[in-house]
Length: 156
Image (cartoon, rainbow, N blue to C red; front, side):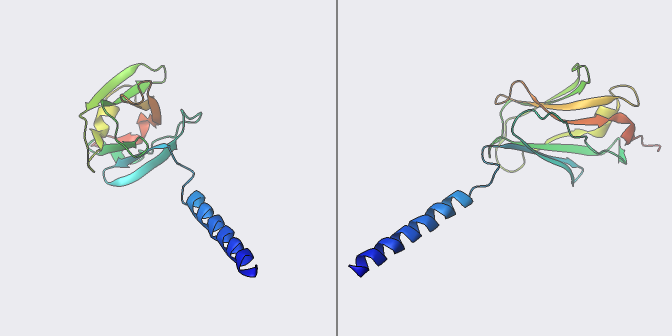
């Protein structure tokens, strides 16, 4: 009789450990989109997206020069989007510049453009938004805001 009770208790303990291990193996960001923004090869912004955020992060471009390159990687729950597009929009949501990117697979999935393309869009102290759209998120996600005064010209 004791061996049955002891086997039953051991079995319960092992089941509890197995269920706990399974539950704790998942992170809190399951099913979450994410993106990273690099200025040249330096990570300057990384975010997880569950829905359109109430507060839009500012993309830090202090010290950036016109020839610098921005690269954005957007991840849809572990997959790369199709028909990807990055646009720069005014505060009034007017499209100022638009880039389309080919469908890709593998590791080189960055969407690249030059800082000078943003700098040339308007007034020196303009605030613009970086918006990502694709087939999977046709309404778009505002990734960041940029204040153009933070971008230096080549002569600075």
